[in-house]
Every structure is written in structure tokens, then in C-alpha cells.
Length: 215
Image (tube, one colour):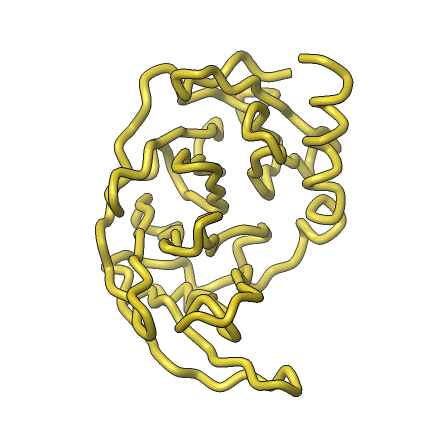
């Protein structure tokens, strides 16, 4: 990995590292003006019995009003996840991804004009997913349970398909306190913030979607 690529990736998550200890669910928002992709904020309830995607409208003053609550068909923890990126919108604005930490799944929602609909619910590729990210159709999930890992998927029209060679461990087999996963701007590097180790762990992303060994 060259120096420029490292710098691009670290710039992406620089602010996230400072915010990683926040306990409330993360927000995903858009500055466009097309249905719920414009003037809307997405978050999750993290409810233990039925996690929900919560969609808020945002007016010109910045005030939020709840517009919709849609079941993820998964379960949350009912407490702060200690992470960022539990809810993430795709770069093209067509999908929203939500982690279900207590049921070890990820829900994908399609955005249709002024509404959202559940497209799929898939296994997160590990235990206790807390953060999800997307770049050009590739999705990566950070699992904090057990030894901890990152798992890669391809978004196929709303269904996440696991990618071969795209499940990797973190900097150590447990005790890392992972907080957030994110792609670099060019999608060629994946980074994870680790609170307990004070490390940024990075992975080279191959042309086939596989992840290299942790650095």
C-alpha cells in the first residue's frame, strides 16, 4: 500500500476516531433533494424486540420530524453500541444498511422516491455487528463479538452476497474494542478504528473484493 493511499484512508476516518466512543446509534444523511434522500436523516431504534429503521424529515432550520419507522426484522441490544456507522446510506443514495447487533444480521433497505422498503436480511459474517460501510456496491461489516472481524459483501440489488476472501480478523484475536469500519475514498483500502488498542487497522481491497491481511 503506498503512502498516498494510506493518507486518503486515514483522512476518511480521522473524525470518526474521535467520535468512536459515542453510545447512541449513528446517523446517515443526504444533502440531495429527491424523496427521502434529500432533507432526511436515517437512524435505528436498536430495540431488543424489534430493531427499526427510523426516517426523519429535516426542515430548513434543521429540526427533525419522525416520518417512518420500519422493522429491520432483526434485534438490537437496547443499549449504546459504542460505535459509529450502525446505519449507512450507499454512495448512490439508493440503499440504507442497518446492523442488528443482537441477532448478528444486517438489513438492507431500498429507497423508492418518498418511501423505504426492506430488501433483505443476511448474516453479518460474525458476532455482534456494530458498523457497516459501502463503496461502489461493496459492503463491509465490522463484527465486535468473539475475536472480532470484518466481513465483505457485494450488494446485488438489495441482497448482500458474501465475498470469498473478504473475512479478516482485527489487529489481535480479541480485546481490540473495534468502533467503526470505512472505505478510503478510492475504495482500495478498508480501515477499522480500535479503541482498546489505539490502532487503525487497514486492509488492501483486491479487484475481486477480497481483503488483504490486516496492517
